[in-house]
Length: 237
Image 1 (cartoon, rainbow, N blue to C red):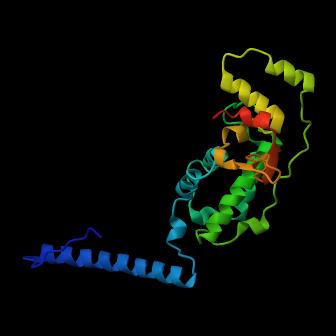
Image 2 (image 1 turned 120 degrees about the horizontal axis):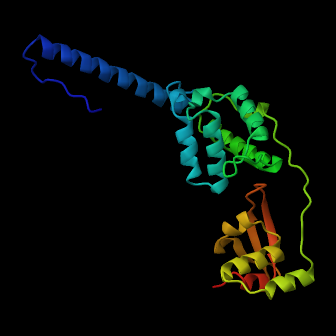
Image 3 (image 1 turned 90 degrees about the horizontal axis):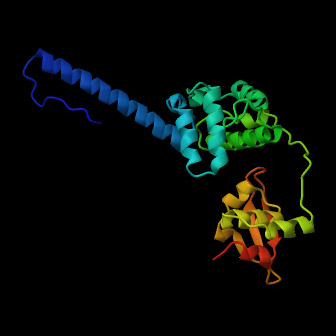
């Protein structure tokens, strides 16, 4: 605890000091006993409710993908850099949902955030709330009272076969950029998913071909995608 007392107090000042330290030690012991009981029997620890939710959020970002950092940055701005676990309730989360629907982009402050970006960010935030509730860090499962942001259908542009061949024959000073572009054309993957791609996600399929097993960043859904040998060769060694 870092608390020390005089073994043989010599005067009233030292005796008073010992009494104060013993009272503090007893207070700390009581809090720790309560925490142990709360964890043992599944009670909510009121002391933890005063903990820093933003610090918890940032720690989760270390084991998640880049989008979590973007959601963290927006939420930190929304709460003006201060939020405890006790602050997390339905009203606050609904207001954050409204914020996302009207917020501008962080890297382009004058440009409004796309609705589908807001939908993805709020889905990520709800995932965090689920983890926090599971960890008994928040007092209620607020997700039960939150409406998700629906994705909008968007027109997806595509290249014709001749346009892809033209792209393949066009010189490029950055080979990896050209390969990534062609890989995107052959697989339909977004650049964000290609940047996060690892060799562990490329697996042998049932027909001796190859597949990608990945979780897309935008929709946060798992998918299995067959790929051609030509696309595989673009990945390099």
